[in-house]
Length: 221
Image (cartoon, rainbow, N blue to C red; front, side, top):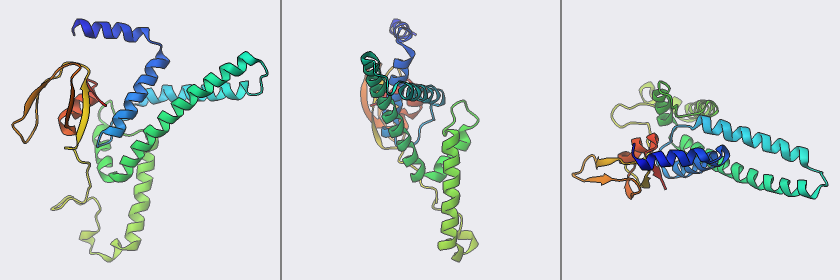
């Protein structure tokens, strides 16, 4: 850790938790909209944000009808801040649900692999939505046309030969910025090697920077 990292930690501690949560939520929202595949669910951040939204809604409900001009001005500020948080949360969740609906079987496999780690891919609500939605789709497909096929051709998750599990494009190009020193990067399948330094902005394949994005060393922009 160099002096820049130490200064960044000191300055981060001086920022109020609410402001830091807003910054983290904005970064998570941008990353989720840019990344080709689903990113791990930021459970702790979402718990704090949703808890703050509930408290602000209760405050607005309690203060509604107060004739004090100062209270009305405070209420306008609170409502404006509340709408900003609600917009980010809604847009963030919509981006995640879109990816879940687009690649449901792949998402299930990835979530199963991530349950052993400290960063599960899906939240509890997202996992319930995915399993129930996929069960309904499977039942619909079976009654519509799959039931007429031979048993060997009825599996939606068959990976023998041509895989039936649709996956996101891991080689899609993304814009990213290095928050810390990454070092030399090798692009698999090519002879391309380059060094990513702190503050650099690159357009690279998602598969190249995926691990650094998840670790927080690189952010998507």
